[in-house]
Length: 177
Image (cartoon, rainbow, N blue to C red; front, side):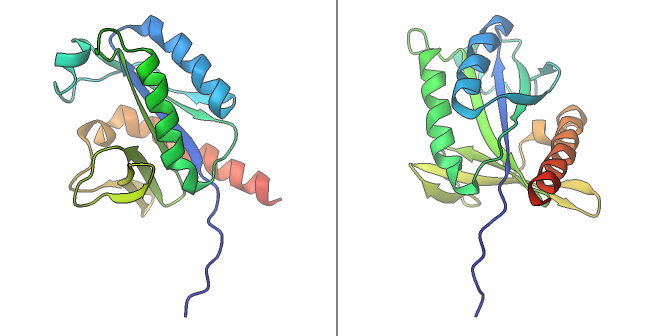
């Protein structure tokens, strides 16, 4: 029989994309108020892997990703997604979203995103939210899966995620010492 053990805390990673860079400031302020100080911030990255969001949000979408100093309990991901959905709603004008906020978490061995959309490979985690196993970390590199979004396979995004993973490992070592 396996003996349950508490899971390690995770590094909260939030990606925000928009076509109005000025919206990032109030969104980041709201995220900091909810989740604590930011400790890593990516450069602006073009979000041009799909046109899925253009109809609602317009063209020329760009993304920034960020992590937060406090580590989180893995089971908090569904409530974090609910909170980020509320921030998105505050930025909505005439039913048109102006920002998309994607929370997830980093562990040594995987990167997981939260979504409100069910699919065959997603696991329900509560609050009408599903966990999407997005990347595995094996043999010294991120490994994509058949369902990994194209932007998370991209070198610019993965470069930031390697920084996140390294910071997470430092955070865990500090926590354990």
